[in-house]
Each structure stands twice: as C-alpha cells, then as structure tokens.
Length: 216
Image 1 (cartoon, rainbow, N blue to C red):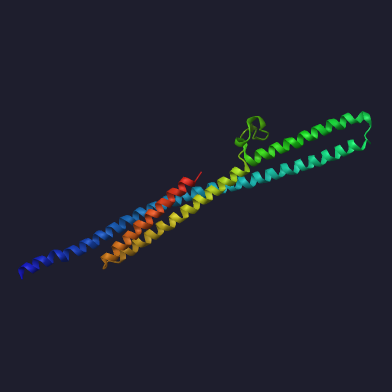
Image 2: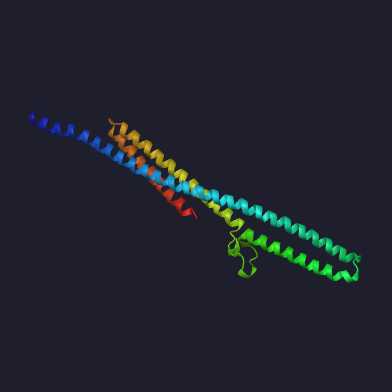
C-alpha cells in the first residue's frame, strides 16, 4: 500500500505542470503571432499607400495621353485641310510656298505629338535616348509610362492581397491560442490547437513573405 501511494503522487503532480506548460506555449505563440500581425499590418498599409499613388499616376498619365491625342487629332485635321487647299489649286502661286511651309510645320507637330504619346505610354526607359520627345519638369528621360504605372498598380494590388490573407491567418492563430488557453481540462485538445496554430502561422508567414517578394 505505501508503494502505491508513492507512485500516485508524481502522476497527480505531472498533469497540472503539463497543462501549465501548454498554456505557456500557447501564450508565447499568441504574442508571437500578434507581433507578426502588427508587422504585416504595417507593411500592408505601406503597400496600399504605394498602390494608391501608382493608380493616381496611372490616371494622370492616361489623361495626359488623351490630351496629346486630342492635340494630334487637331493637327492632323489641319494638315488634311491644308493639303486639300493645295491640291485644289485655288491658292495663288505666290502663296504656295507659305502653305507648303505650314504643311511641313503641321506635319512636324503631328509627328512630335505621336512621339510624345509613345513615350508617355511605354516610358522613357523603353524609348531610345535619341527619340525622347517629352520632358518632365524640364528633364528628359524621366517619364514613367502608362503601362509601367498600370503594372506597378497590379503588382501592389497582388502583394496587398497576399498580406491580407497572411493577416487573416495570423488572426486565426491568435483565436486558436486564446481557445487553447481557455480549454484547461483537455490537454490533448490543447496540443491539437497548438499544432493548428503552428500550421496556420507557418502558412501565414510564407504567404506574407511571398507578398513582400511580389511588391515592387
């Protein structure tokens, strides 16, 4: 009988220690995932801000491109009108030279607007230096094209979606950790929740890192 009592004492003392240990692990994991959630939130807010800037620039450059298109269309109409006048022969011979000069100037403006539109569309980096036609604040070769702004916007949007998913998984981890601490009487279930926390947390970290890599 004395032997049996000595065997029961360590058994009854081990269970509370194991439960306390499990709760400690759960608390540490909650703190860790809360920190990761805060970091992910900070990075995601910055990416969303950059995405809004890129989208705003995309709209501004699109409007700029449209204004160049309108100017080019007006010059093309003027060029057609001048050519039609010259072909009708109603212009006196002494005025033909003036009309021809005007036609050459108008044609030059049409080509200039076309070159500017191309640079605004694709960006200075995708246009040979000798073909740069549009300045930005007095500097040549500084144009970031519409296509580039659109690509930046899409990349930022994709990255923010990844961070949103990562934040969701970190929040799930925190909830699982809280439930793990509440369930004090079921050690096995506590361990299962800890495993789930680690699984969801690992996936959240990987997705967040992937989103960070995708960000421009």
